[in-house]
Length: 106
Ligand SMILES: [Zn+2]
Image 1: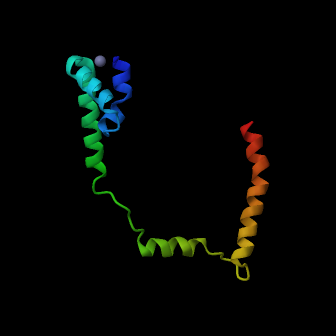
Image 2: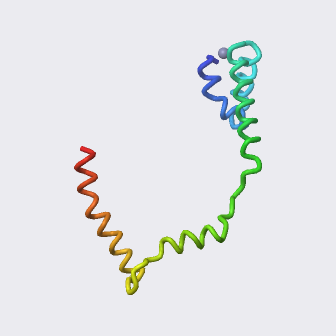
Image 3: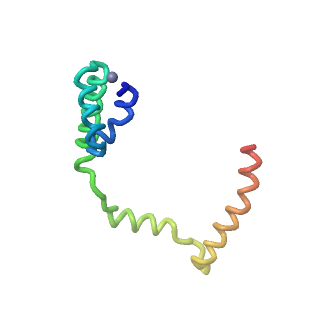
């Protein structure tokens, strides 16, 4: 097994997804090849640090007052303009802006 093959399969090796023979070959290579062993050590450290960094970050609730402020800012300010009319305005703005964007990006 080459260094490239071992390094390329570290994700599967780490996740226990290699076939038994492949895992055994990887272990044997890592035991005898110092550069791959160092890389494997840094790989495990990186994964552990990543897990630690994201451990307490779960789904976050958006504060109610922030939601209310966003909705209040979004609501049409002109009397008599229904939300449906605003959707039409946004749609037409997008249609009108598309050729300008295409012109400047070419
Ligand atoms: Zn190697």
